Length: 173
Image 1 (cartoon, rainbow, N blue to C red):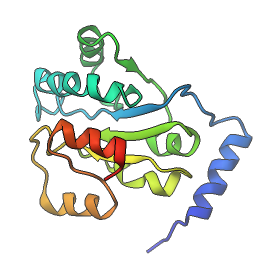
Image 2 (cartoon, rainbow, N blue to C red; image 1 turned 45 degrees about the vertical axis):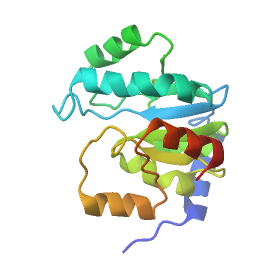
Image 3 (cartoon, rainbow, N blue to C red; image 1 turned 90 degrees about the vertical axis):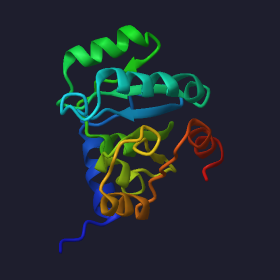
Image 4 (tube, helix red, strand yellow; image 1 turned 120 degrees about the vertical axis):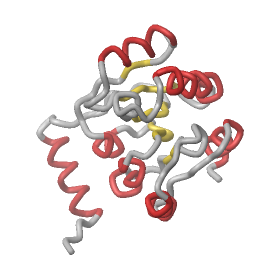
């Protein structure tokens, strides 16, 4: 297998920064919500994902602003629907993969998603602690047990309720 070291990642990130291809965009402490095309794949209804997002807004906004990073396969209708229903939701339309954002966004507190592999790499790309939280248990979204095990071994949290999510953000357990 090919091993990619933290040092190699850091050198590549520094090269991107030096060439002004990667730079910070977030201006206040934030929680990055990585969208996934679950509605488009008919794994969630749009109302289910909206309800999940709405339930997260108030408690998480106390910890930092929530930035919604659309997945490339998200429908524009879904994004517009969420923004209309949750006007305080900030849409973060950056083209960079989440992993590169981890490296430059020093005030990123946490990353939240369902099953995104991007949850597993905060420690590889960031030089500060970013908490990775899967919403699959919270949203009662089924996940293959081996995949969940891999993600847990990578340090991803799987809270089952809002109180646990807030506790992870505040205390880190």
